[in-house]
Length: 226
Image (cartoon, rainbow, N blue to C red; front, side, top):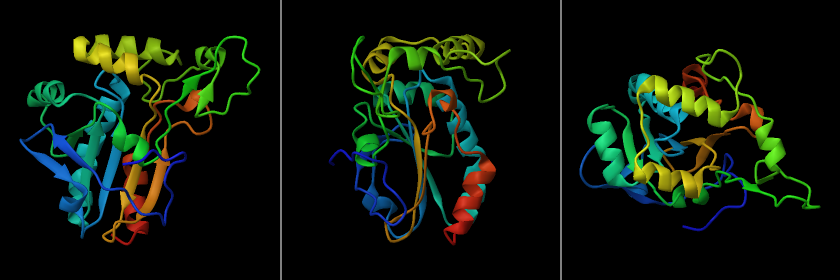
């Protein structure tokens, strides 16, 4: 799989992959899904409470999509052992795959932001490059659970405490290497072609952790002819 410099768009071929599954033994490949449409979401690690909530939302959407012939897949930026431990206690009907190196995220062109050095004369090009000041100014409250819009890292801390989620060594390692990985959702048709794509926060850091709603996903699947 090669890195895409920009998110894949409708009409482009979806890259192949083969990843270990988190909620059952074995792997799932692109070939296993070929011949029928599927929704695939690429997420940050388990340390991200907003990503965990989106996976829960996909579980709610999954029966409607399956009735329309669409499979639902979530790719988590986590080692398989860590993901299996977490989802053993929080089972979901969504097919969960693990990519601790974000190789499939990159293959589908989901951006990974990089911070410019302090004092750099280079102009930031969000979502690929950003200044630390630009990120520090971000305020979010996408699920309405926070008392007010807060910095994304502060929001993470509050919601992880609310959930009783404690980062383990694997989570800290993933966070250290991939904290600025963005999230992307793609609908792939039965021919293996991208039919719909949605990338997190393309308009700026204040939209971080704002993901497509259940209604938006179902509508997109309908537009795809599913």
